[in-house]
Structure formats: C-alpha cells, structure tokens
Image (cartoon, rainbow, N blue to C red; front, top):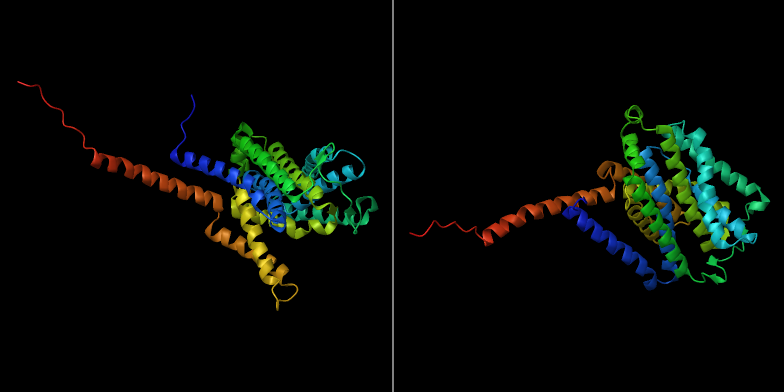
Length: 351
C-alpha cells in the first residue's frame, strides 16, 4: 500500500519539479559569461553533493575533494588527448576517481575529525605537486588542446551544450543520492551519523559504509572534473587549489548536510555571492588582491553564520518553515469550512 504524501511533501515535490524545469530552460536565456558561471555552479553542486553525503551521513570531513575533481579532469583529458573517445573518457573519470578514493580512504578513514581533514588536505597538496612535476601530465604549464566532448562526429560546440551536460550530471547525482538515502544502507548511514558505536552495536558495518560513501563522493567529484576538462579545454594544477576544496565544504554546510537539494542551494548561494564580491573587488580604486581577500572572508563569515544561526543549513530550515505553514493552513481550513457550512441538526420523526 502506497503512503499518501503530506501537504508539505506535495509542495516540496512541486517545487522540485519547477526547479528542475527552470534550471533546464535557463541556459536558453543566458549569454556566454553567464553560461560559464552557470556551468561552473552546477559542476560545484555535483562535487558538493558527495561532500554533503560524506559529512551528513558518514560524519567524515574532507578538505581534499579538489584532488578527486582533478583526478577526474586529468583522466578524461589524457584519454581524449591520446585518441580515445571523449565520451569514454568522461565515463572513466568517475570510475578512476572513485577507485582512488577507495584506495586513499582505506588508510585515511582510520583517522577522525580534524586529523582526517588535514590528511585529505595533505593528499591534495601531494597530488598537485606530482602533477606539477610530471611532463606527461602537463607539468606546471598544463594540458592544452583537449578535444570537445561529443559522441562520434557530433561534438558540443557551444557553452550551452556544456551547461546542459552539467545539468544532466547534477540530475544523475541527485537521483543517486536520493536512492542511497532511502535505501537500507541509507538507514545504516543515518544511524552511523548519529553514533558510530550505536550503529556498530546494531550490526551496521561502519567501516565498510564509511569507505563506500567516501568512494562514492570521490566518484561524484570525478564526474564533475571530467565535464570541467572538456568545458575548459585546458588544465593546470592552479585550477584545483586548496581554496576549491574549502569552497565545497562551505557549500555543503550552507546548503544543508545530508540533503538532496542542499548542494544546489549551497552552490548557487556561494557562487553568486562570490561572483558579486569579485565584481566589487574589481572596481576601479580597489587593490589588486581585493577579490581573493573577499573570497576568503566570505567563506569564513558564512561558516560562522551558518553554525550560529542555521546549523542545519538553508534547505532544512526552509523545509521546517514549509511544514509549519502547511500545518497552520491545515488547522485553519477546517475551521473556516465549519463556519461557512454549519452542520445540519437531525430532525425527529414527523407526527
């Protein structure tokens, strides 16, 4: 027997459908600079979805997901440069990133808290140093001449095509996240996020689940990196700095950890705000380093504000407000109907 949706769930489903349609149609209305921001926003949301899943359910913080983003990008780019089909390179990007995530996760997930955060950060720094030294990876100069993404002879020639490719990737990641959360392992992950000891005593394979989520989140980052490589047609170690990984964590926290829509909301909020601050910092009379200083300040300020006033993030706070409004509406509606249509008094038998 199917469960009936509550009014709040019906409204939430309607809003989700509207958001999906609007984001799919939006590339038709944007110009080239706006399409660039839109594509990078969606790719950030794809990576943030994995970070949100890792933080919200496995309780593991990673400051090195920019490394898996780079692994996916370089995998797709190297395969395409060496004559492999671009679509095959894109398909291999999340696979390679996920496998490396599993290999790295075996020793690193023995750590907890800030020890794990610093270990993942160290992994990213080591990876970027290796990329900068190896000529077959382009070195500090970078990889150029990356072919356009396509199927056979049909290639994506404009920014709008990559915007829709990023939209499809985000849709796929959100559906996977939703299915994982609602599955039996998802219930185990929720128990794991509450208490590892209690989850283990209930029969949840804590270590295996943590490693699986770490690998899945790395695969999400690899998928976004593959699209990023074809979109930019040029890769260099400077494209995957430490600030990028911190940005993904801030997006996950601001949007709402462990939620399906949190990554998109968080990525949209942070990306648009940072873009506005960059425009302000680039105004005449501002110091040359003003945009970078503004970026660091925004990440720090938003983390503090989110922890103090919205510890669960924007999406859970919005969901709570929506449920409150629907409950008030549901309580008021029967009273109004009762005042408008009085209940008839039953008549006795005629004599």
